[in-house]
Amino acid sequence: MPPIRVLLVEDSPVVLIILKRIFVSSPEIEVVGTAQNGLDALELIPKIQPDVICTDLHMAQMNGLEFIREVMAKFPRPILVISASVQAEDTYNVFQLLEAGAVDVFPKPTSGCASDYEQLKLELTAKIKVLSGVKVFTRHQRNKEVGTQRSNYQSLITHHQLPITNNKSQIIKVVAIGASTGGPQALHAIISQFPANFPVPIICVQHISEGFLKGLVDWLASGCKLPVKIAAAGELPQPGNVYFPPEKRHLQLDKTGRFIYSSGLPLNGHCPSVSVTFNSVASFYSRSAAGVLLTGMGKDGADGMLSIAQAGGLTIAQDETTSIVFGMPKEAIALGAVQHILPINAIAPLLLSKILNR
Image (cartoon, rainbow, N blue to C red):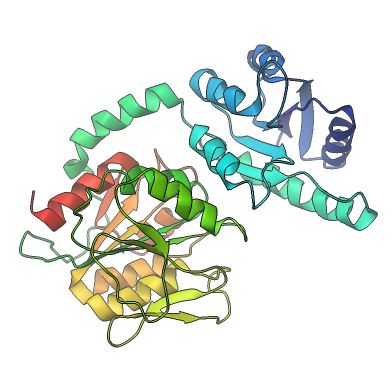
């Protein structure tokens, strides 16, 4: 296979040297160009055709945020933001960048010791390899495309149709959503479509780096009409509220339907795990549950989705076209656990039609 072609956009000569040294050490990665700001980088992209772009946030003439918006409109590519301003406390920056189209962020190292450099090299090269397989979309075309798909979402039914029929007599009492890579943008696209009087609770599990959960909650809350919060142990899920598990805790329901935490081993490599929550939702709510599996790498959530389907609940997976990474939905589809495969902007309308009988 040819090496992954990387463009580095960075105005610090020292950081540029470090990044080039890291990537040159990997035979699977080739740095095909460098630029000191977004304007110069935009001129380079059509000439060098990079597979992945790494950019700083703070740069003269055109900063990283403006650059990302331009790239996603003109030359969509997977973008990794490497910056000192994407630490856990910089949540506003992080989610602005993700909303603009960046796939991931990576904090610049704060230490220069050799062991940190080796860890930095391992993590960065791993991220580049992941991003090289990520699908991205031209932003201004994506809305048009999804709008067309949205009007036809009822026809997008999986061939792995389950022997379960969901009709208007089914009463949905909870929506459970799982996501990983690309999930924050997908969650925002769904939850922002729900009205303030949405009549059931929404329980979400998002794989996210430690320290970023509160920022995700605040960012989602600022863009939707529903309260978004971290679930409290012992709390009874309330209609119209969006809940997330705390960091490093699985979120489940007890026999009375109240939230409980467990700090067991990661399942499918994750704690919190989508499958743990989905299994618990299926056990308590049975056919009154709706499970939604969104973009993400790996297979977490697939087994849990099957539990919801086997209990008679409604199951929906994000389609490949609009998924940043079609891993988790694909695994659930392979298990025969998915009744509807939909583009991201068609998921909320289907849920509303089922829940509100629209």
